[in-house]
Length: 331
Ligand SMILES: NC(=O)c1ccc[n+]([C@@H]2O[C@H](COP(=O)([O-])OP(=O)(O)OC[C@H]3O[C@@H](n4cnc5c(N)ncnc54)[C@H](OP(=O)(O)O)[C@@H]3O)[C@@H](O)[C@H]2O)c1
Image 1 (cartoon, protein in one colour):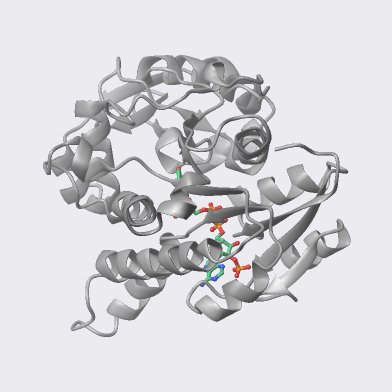
Image 2 (cartoon, rainbow, N blue to C red):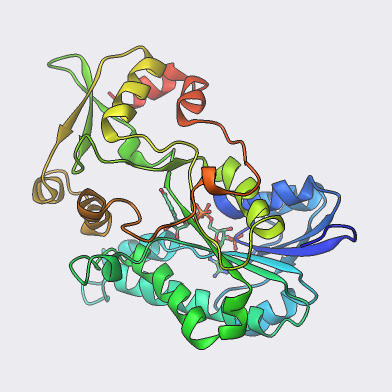
């Protein structure tokens, strides 16, 4: 896309981690007008976007007509769909209502509906040049059906498939960004073992497996800007700042904190039964252990972008943290 005239990007999820990064990146560019969607324009995050120069528009992914209106005149649209808001709300509801349907299934259905609504609305925008959707790898397909109960991965894959199969004209304008694990992901925060004084990473992934890590709040925007401005439509991109092995992650954490750290590989069953970690998260670990984060998708990686995007490596980000607070939390 050329950038001589000001173009308009519409950002779905702009008050969140990924969308906020996209909105702020484009707000810093004189070539772009930024329109941010939110359910609540008076929230603090929405107000901050407005103060920074964005047009803030009320819209809800559950209501397609609100999206059609908000997408009008867009040259580019970034869409991120959220699984966890619905999932957490349903968990809370299920505590009082034993007959409530599974939280994961409800969150899956809601996320798929949201993604389809956004795609259908985007497909009707005549000015649209590029549509970027933030997905996760199609775990069920890549594992030939072995893994597929991690609904926050599956929902996003179903949305990509829907666009590719049902909205071919939009598909021609689509690029997909697959974010690695957030650097804030709890699995990257070890706990202190008081008996040894070492910090322990409890993982169901072997030491030699790689885990792409990304600062979603900072790096999503620059990567999405590259996907819109310099990479061809159809690019499927694995976004990360660093792609270390699990063993390297332990070393990075140890160097940054100055504390001894080790990795303990546990079984999925132990982590579910004893540590009470939901299968929704653990199945993704099992998939990564067997297939890697994105299986054999052959995604473009940061080094493969035609214009290099410089983001902060995980180790640098960690070194800048307030370690007193982190170590206190890990006790
Ligand atoms: N944690 C990880 O390691 C990781 C890695 C890769 C991908 N992900 C995926 O990232 C996604 C979450 O992204 P995030 O961290 O950017 O989310 P977030 O910070 O929790 O923000 C959620 C965003 O979604 C918007 N939203 C939610 N429901 C909406 C609706 N009905 N209509 C319009 N907007 C709606 C919210 O906007 P308003 O509240 O302002 O309306 C908010 O901007 C999840 O689906 C997760 O699976 C996570």
